[in-house]
Amino acid sequence: MNPTVVNPVAVDPIDLSAAASALPAPWASHLLGQVGTAAVKVLRMDGRPLPVESHADPEVLLVLDGRLELLLNGAELTVGPGELQLIPAHAAHAVRPGSRGTLLIVEVPEAE
Image (cartoon, rainbow, N blue to C red; front, side):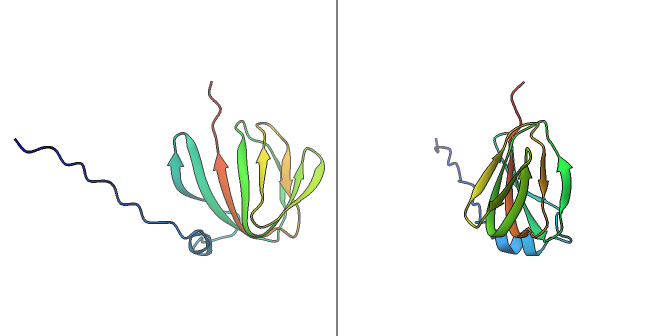
Protein backbone atom coordinates (compact mmCIF):
# COMPACT_ATOMS: atom_id res chain seq x y z
CA MET A 1 0.00 0.00 0.00
CA ASN A 2 1.38 3.41 -0.97
CA PRO A 3 1.20 6.15 1.63
CA THR A 4 -0.86 9.18 0.71
CA VAL A 5 1.33 12.11 -0.22
CA VAL A 6 -0.09 15.52 0.50
CA ASN A 7 1.31 18.18 -1.78
CA PRO A 8 1.64 21.53 -0.06
CA VAL A 9 -0.12 24.37 -1.82
CA ALA A 10 2.40 26.72 -3.36
CA VAL A 11 1.51 30.32 -2.66
CA ASP A 12 3.48 33.03 -4.40
CA PRO A 13 4.23 36.21 -2.47
CA ILE A 14 1.98 39.14 -3.29
CA ASP A 15 3.67 42.31 -4.52
CA LEU A 16 1.55 44.89 -2.70
CA SER A 17 2.85 47.89 -4.65
CA ALA A 18 2.12 46.14 -7.96
CA ALA A 19 -1.34 45.10 -6.75
CA ALA A 20 -2.15 48.69 -5.76
CA SER A 21 -0.73 50.11 -9.01
CA ALA A 22 -2.86 47.71 -11.04
CA LEU A 23 -6.11 48.91 -9.48
CA PRO A 24 -8.41 50.67 -11.96
CA ALA A 25 -9.07 53.64 -9.66
CA PRO A 26 -7.83 55.11 -6.40
CA TRP A 27 -9.83 54.33 -3.27
CA ALA A 28 -11.17 51.10 -4.84
CA SER A 29 -9.91 48.35 -2.57
CA HIS A 30 -8.94 44.94 -3.89
CA LEU A 31 -9.34 41.77 -1.83
CA LEU A 32 -5.98 39.98 -1.69
CA GLY A 33 -7.16 37.06 0.42
CA GLN A 34 -8.74 35.82 3.61
CA VAL A 35 -6.99 34.86 6.84
CA GLY A 36 -9.61 33.06 8.87
CA THR A 37 -12.51 35.49 8.89
CA ALA A 38 -10.31 38.54 8.25
CA ALA A 39 -10.30 40.12 4.79
CA VAL A 40 -6.94 41.52 3.61
CA LYS A 41 -7.24 44.33 1.05
CA VAL A 42 -5.00 46.84 -0.67
CA LEU A 43 -5.83 50.24 -2.13
CA ARG A 44 -4.15 53.27 -3.64
CA MET A 45 -4.67 56.71 -2.07
CA ASP A 46 -4.57 59.76 -4.35
CA GLY A 47 -4.79 62.81 -2.09
CA ARG A 48 -8.56 63.22 -2.17
CA PRO A 49 -10.51 63.20 1.09
CA LEU A 50 -13.24 60.68 1.86
CA PRO A 51 -16.34 61.40 3.98
CA VAL A 52 -16.90 60.19 7.52
CA GLU A 53 -17.93 56.56 7.79
CA SER A 54 -18.12 53.80 10.37
CA HIS A 55 -18.26 50.03 10.15
CA ALA A 56 -19.83 47.33 12.30
CA ASP A 57 -16.47 45.55 12.40
CA PRO A 58 -13.00 46.77 13.46
CA GLU A 59 -10.25 47.23 10.91
CA VAL A 60 -6.51 47.77 10.74
CA LEU A 61 -5.03 50.35 8.37
CA LEU A 62 -1.34 49.82 7.52
CA VAL A 63 0.42 52.48 5.45
CA LEU A 64 2.93 50.75 3.18
CA ASP A 65 4.19 53.94 1.54
CA GLY A 66 3.09 57.57 1.58
CA ARG A 67 0.90 58.81 4.39
CA LEU A 68 -2.68 58.57 5.59
CA GLU A 69 -4.25 61.74 6.96
CA LEU A 70 -7.04 60.46 9.16
CA LEU A 71 -9.83 61.87 11.29
CA LEU A 72 -10.72 59.31 13.98
CA ASN A 73 -13.46 60.13 16.48
CA GLY A 74 -12.73 63.84 15.96
CA ALA A 75 -8.93 63.56 16.38
CA GLU A 76 -6.62 64.42 13.45
CA LEU A 77 -3.92 61.78 12.95
CA THR A 78 -1.11 61.25 10.45
CA VAL A 79 -0.14 57.63 9.85
CA GLY A 80 3.19 57.25 8.08
CA PRO A 81 4.97 54.48 6.19
CA GLY A 82 5.29 51.31 8.23
CA GLU A 83 2.73 52.53 10.78
CA LEU A 84 -0.71 51.14 11.39
CA GLN A 85 -3.87 52.49 12.93
CA LEU A 86 -6.50 50.37 14.63
CA ILE A 87 -10.06 51.48 13.91
CA PRO A 88 -12.52 50.16 16.50
CA ALA A 89 -15.94 48.91 15.41
CA HIS A 90 -18.44 51.76 14.99
CA ALA A 91 -15.72 54.46 15.26
CA ALA A 92 -16.38 57.50 13.08
CA HIS A 93 -13.42 58.03 10.74
CA ALA A 94 -12.65 59.94 7.56
CA VAL A 95 -9.70 60.40 5.23
CA ARG A 96 -8.43 63.97 5.19
CA PRO A 97 -6.92 65.69 2.12
CA GLY A 98 -3.30 64.81 1.36
CA SER A 99 -3.49 61.05 1.88
CA ARG A 100 -1.28 59.44 -0.77
CA GLY A 101 0.39 56.07 -1.23
CA THR A 102 -0.49 52.46 -0.63
CA LEU A 103 -2.75 51.26 2.16
CA LEU A 104 -3.25 47.69 3.39
CA ILE A 105 -6.57 47.11 5.15
CA VAL A 106 -7.45 44.16 7.36
CA GLU A 107 -11.15 43.91 8.17
CA VAL A 108 -11.96 41.63 11.09
CA PRO A 109 -15.60 40.63 11.59
CA GLU A 110 -16.65 40.56 15.24
CA ALA A 111 -17.88 37.25 16.60
CA GLU A 112 -21.58 37.35 17.33
